[in-house]
Image 1 (tube, protein in one colour):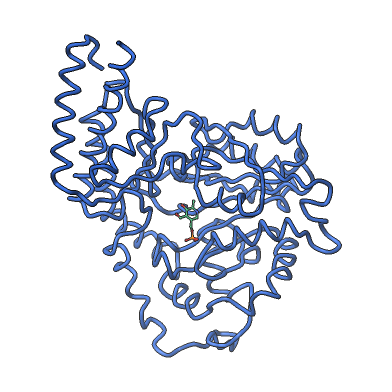
Image 2: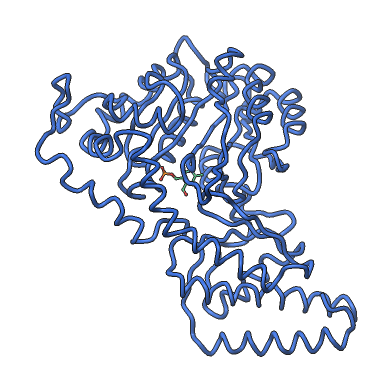
Length: 424
Ligand code: PLP
């Protein structure tokens, strides 16, 4: 940042003028929505009519009828391929993996007869480890069930394992951890092999009923020619005898239709049986017609990879625009840092401490909506008030470009005003 006071005042005035110019444009732009744009959804319009009247599986099952909570074999195979595990461990469900996460938390809280007494059997207090910044809806699930959340810092290799191991060894009321292991929301991190292996050991050193929630929402969502690779946690867990403490999730929400995809849950066969019994009073079977449509549309890894390349062609330019706009305006000024994800749906930006909410307020006043400050932290509280989640996929490039112009001016203006205040 410019350091002489006069230069700073001049810079502030110039920024204020640009900012006022934005106000006159009466913008209405939104960078909050981590969802696919319409052209991405169009890539999967082949789902429509793909069954062409054939609703019967090889084993004679009519997918239009009731039944089969674990899902049809073809869809379980699709989930198994996405998660890199055996189909026998997979449940293919409805359209939302978040819904399966919610239910798995509830299943563990309730416990299952003869197997587990439930997380609250010995103490009303239940805690989860939450690597931050993270996915706000994981935190909403915890909040809903009155589960206390503990912020876990990130390292470049993933969540800080020294912190995590010390916490679970010291406190048996810690029953779970949220992990988004690949192209994490919002930081874009992919966990290192060593991190995955150490995480797989956790159920062995934590409370007996500790569970790793492995939300692999962005398993195939790469933006480069050199995708990150993620070690197979199920293989580690099986080798270490901890697979009962692992539950994995994925979905096609950001592969096909965000509101009408297929979601998957995978865990040990014993857990899967228990979870099936838990679900039975609430559902007779999920949407098997949609499962079959997806199995036909994505019959193998090549079909998934081809579709993801088409997504990449549409969204990589948006991520490149974020990088180029942030770099051009902010690089080297010491007032912001941000991630350059190789996949996923978000860019995570950090302002100077205490300036995320002010930046977001300034942007909102000239018509650019950003994800609320703190949304990426449990309880909506970012202790440093630095993190801003940028979701570039949904807006058209032109809108994204203008929104980023506003964002960088707001960051610099907030920083300059702060610096001026500190100098006087
Ligand atoms: N998990 C993560 C990490 C996400 O970012 C999202 C959506 O943004 C979801 C889960 C939601 O998945 P689904 O649509 O399968 O419920």
